[in-house]
Amino acid sequence: MKKYLQKSVCIIVACMIFSGCSRQPVVYQKADTAMGTIINQTIYVSGGSGNGQAISEEVISCINELETEYLSWRLDTSEVYQINASAGNGQKAELSGLLGDVLEQCEKVYTASDGAFDFTVGKVAGLWDIDSWAVMQTPDAFIPPTDEEISGALAYVGSDKCRLEAGYITLPEGMELDLGAVGKGLALDEVQKVLAGREEVSGAVISVGGSILTYGSKPDGSNWNVGIVNPGDTSQNLGTLSLAGEWYISTSGDYERFIEKDGIRYHHILDPHTGKPADSGVKSVTIICTAGSGISGREGLYSDALSTACFVLGVEDGLKLAEEFGAEALFVDAQDEIYMTEGMKQYFHLSNAEK
Ligand code: AMP
Ligand code: MG
Image 1 (cartoon, rainbow, N blue to C red):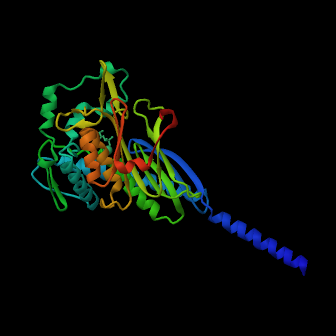
Image 2 (tube, rainbow, N blue to C red):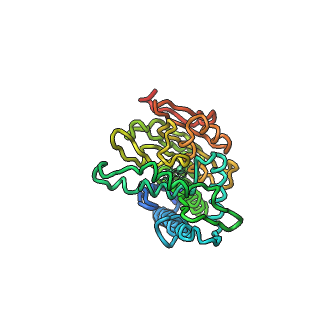
Image 3 (tube, rainbow, N blue to C red):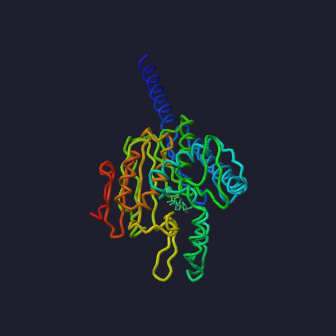
């Protein structure tokens, strides 16, 4: 009888350990390229790493679909491409539910930032040919546009010149939508829905270029640590954000895409009022928005739009703009000084080397 009891206890304990293990999340990590940038995924998932692989593939499909069906200005399959192609034909173009919503949110940031963020910056961005910088053999091949060329292109920029009504947009001739400043953040909003639809996922960190989503929690319950690049030395982190739960983090920096010629750094964040790389005295801006912060379930989009807008505005006006949207902001200026919203101070920890 005693032997029988001992055997039963052993079987029960083994079952408990076994069933416990199968519910225990495993970590699945993957790096890919999509949307012209690097996508890093860390997913805590129950039921084995096969689930992690399947979910990470869904995430990549979601990002690719967003690019090819909605946002790309290069692929003729996308809605943005078709709207740009129809500019000036006098007809209003019908918007999908997704793009209609995105443009509505973008218009709010355009207005609140006095045009520092402008989703019709396409003509000027095209003039600077930003994508070609990365493949140029030498900066000598780079010829900055002339002031005349810039003022010519600026005639086609200004979100207030396009007509946005429920479900439709009308673009004047020559105007080009450019959603490059919100695409990566928007991708995070869509990826969040993929993760939320899979109950096997208990936590994840997904980065799409300079935008990062933290989702759920780690198995040990500790906070997510997200490094912020030191714009003065991009091989180092300036510090770390310690965040619990769901956050959307976007950084706009002059080190992300640039070309240097004759001692001048030309970067990819343009001031829509001058048509030139923004010169507001900042090197980088990081914006963080949490889930449910009251900005329409598009916190990823807002973090991205605001990081671009704040970069163009500079520290003083940028801090005000971030606070207006209930977002937290961290600026690094040209002298490597750090400025933050009050709320950011509880999340940001300076790296030891910098203290
Ligand atoms: P980000 O890296 O998020 O700041 O976005 C920069 C990209 O957005 C550029 O590569 C341009 O395609 C576009 N862009 C540049 N300046 C602006 C601006 N002021 N407002 C909106 N989009 C911009
Ligand atoms: Mg942005």
